[in-house]
Image 1: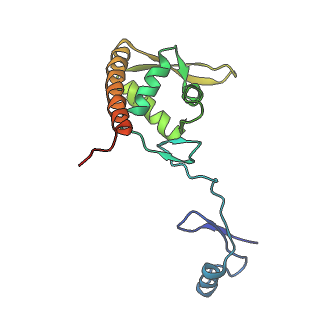
Image 2: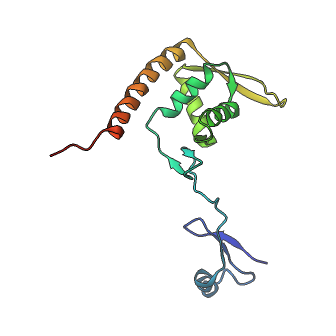
Image 3: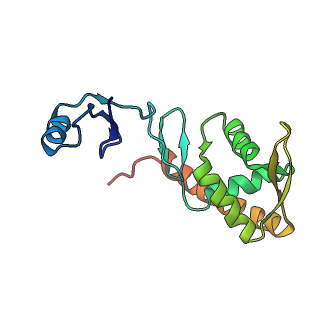
Length: 166
């Protein structure tokens, strides 16, 4: 019977059968084991948003996910999975929100009283927590949108600028 272990790089190592635990056998397995990489084709880290096209994590500035959640909830209450789906759809599949990033963000926004959560039943008849924007959240959305528009304008100016002569 084979034993399967993960090495430090996340690769799955086939470790052989009986006697695999002996120090000599372990040394042999470490140097001659068949390696099978079961990681997805691209790496995604929980707690980040990623881009599907580039297949690499997209490190966004602090507060980006909060803004996207608040903006999504302006259209009415949604459960977590529907929020992630809406962000993905609206961004034309460029932004993928991992559950490891979404649910802590929802808890953070609820703690700040920018959103309110209420248990209900989803379209597929499952119990789900539905989040809605509060009055405080609407004010925060206006403030954050204004900040992000200024940041985007400043970045656009830099990216579109001509090289300085000198």
